[in-house]
Image (cartoon, rainbow, N blue to C red; front, side, top):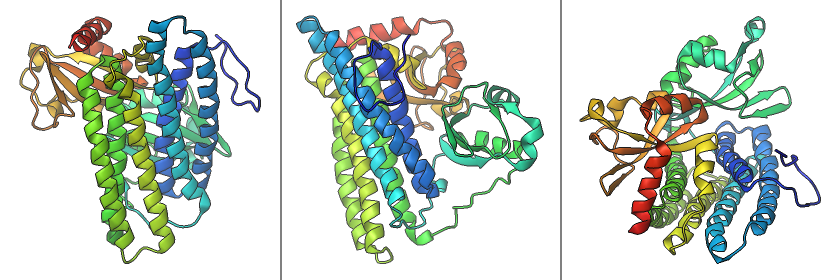
Amino acid sequence: MEKAPLLENEIEYKPIPVKELLKEMKNLSTLMVDLAYLSVLYNDVELAWEVYELEKRIDYLELLLTMQASLATRNVRDAEKIVSIHRLATASNKVSDAAADIAGIVLSKTGLPPLSIVDLFPKDSMVAKIVVPDNFQARGVKIRELIDELKVILNIMVIRRERNWILEPDENFVLRSGDVLLVEGTENSINLLKKYFNIPVTKPYAEKAVEYRRIAEGLYQLKNTSQVMLDLAYTALLTKSEEFAEKIEELEDYVDRMAKSFELEVILHEKLSAMEKLNIVSIAVSSENIADAALEMVEPLLKGLEPHPIIMDVLWETEERISVIEMDETDEGKTLTELGYGDRGITVLAVRRGDKWFITPPYTGFKVKSGDILIVKYFSESEEIVEELEKEEDREEMIEEIQEEEWEE
């Protein structure tokens, strides 16, 4: 299968499957958001520049996809279904543009206050920057060997080796001294990784810049809500659920109001300089744009246009995946926390019970019942775990059954 070159100044048609283009666009846009916020968190100019470079790649991929999708349209029914593909592509591009805008603030070097965001991340979804120590050179280990030894699920998003960046490194990648890892995982898994490298387990930002904590909390809430909206948008496309799409409409309005309130608080903050205020408001606007992109993804669904079936394959094959797990008698009465999925790198986005949806249910209070179907998000590293939890049930059959019920409604 031919793969798109990294970048070209002149665009020409290349016979690359739409599914492959969509997968790369989703992978990169999701990664860019994480990297953009991390560049702000660590004030890392090189990381911010990498986000800028990836944004060019997304632009290129969208042009290729537009050409390929146009060639695949043969009749009115094809045209109706291809709308969802175009919207997913343009929304991914909008997400990447927002991430590039956030990174641009770091590149401008015009100033941000010391925002203590690290300690705001939930324990089941943290990010960390880890430098492989000098004494590790003789113990080179593959990523897969490391994860197997620690018995944890970690997503190593990026590795910087000297001046080179490795995005979503392969499990056979061999780590060496001086490598800079940007890692996502639970608090426990990241702490175990630090101990493996003999790095002290501390919270260096926990007591830093207390006067800016409300600003940090506001930014994190905007970031988190907009990213949840993206997850729900992907779920809406997977299940063909208008209820999910309507929930995203509600959240988009909520984010708009939250952003306005936050921006006013920033403007009135006495200890921030004018430039710091401008930069923080710009990050908030970019987060709002990500929320807008989530709504754009599902607008065709709200207007009665059925998503293209290829989208289901895309959501099952990207780095960050969405699938289903059915509960049985052994799960009856357990809370989502007690299921222990968080420690395995799995997040529950929603629960379907009969014909009723519970969207983003509370982890500590919601108890599952036998027969419930959980919509879950996880990284590719957790694929084997998800397959085991499915207890040999055919997830494609489960999804198709949900799609039929939702579309009939």
